[in-house]
Amino acid sequence: MYFSQFPKKLYTFDFSQKNPTQVTDIFSRFKISSSILNNTIGYEKYQLRDGDTPEIVAYKKYGDPKLHWVICLVNDIIDPQFDFPLSRDALERYIVKKYGYNTIDTAYSTIHHYVLQVTDTLIEVNGPTTVTKTNNIVTLQQFDYASDALLTKNTSTVEVANATFYANNSDNTSAVVATFSKSSAYKAVYVYDYEDQLNEAKRQIKILKPQYVSQLVVELEQVLNG
Image 1 (tube, rainbow, N blue to C red):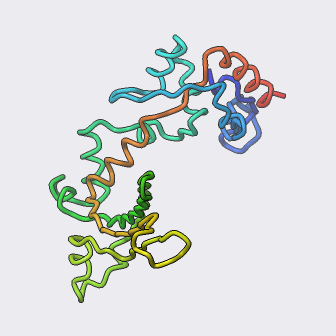
Image 2 (image 1 turned 30 degrees about the vertical axis):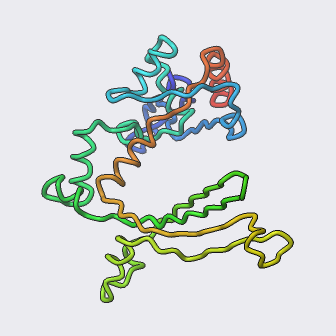
């Protein structure tokens, strides 16, 4: 259904310009405006399950597997085989091939990167406690292997800043209004966990609400065929 809307052109495969054949111009492009894609009114969220394909999702939501292109177009999916989440077996085969491992066990024991988690804690006297956490990716190349800093940072939590706030900016300990502390810790992220996180992040997609699909089909035809 999708490519049936694309314009046709005459093409000769031997460049002789004789006996031209009508072919579909697959180099034409149609893209939904980002302002429309970001409008939540026309969409609903869908959590992909193992085994889901664009055709299966289109059938579930629209009753027609031929509308698979709507699923791909809305979510900017180029290759459904890899842009959809892989099953557990398929993910393990993908990891082994991508990293050149002999077995998947290597992915469980090899560190991909570290995450530096910084925690800010503000405790107000007779008031709320506010905890703010930020995560920053730290690549393996940023560590000094010679000094063994990698292992030290991986296993320790270091207090890096503390502060006490007094009423009227005095040093009167009986007038403490809040305390603040900052701590940091390094957490190792292994190759398998990293790839699994990327895979799981693909599960939530957008579904164009059924009442807008017919309008999209009309717009597709108008854009591609004038």
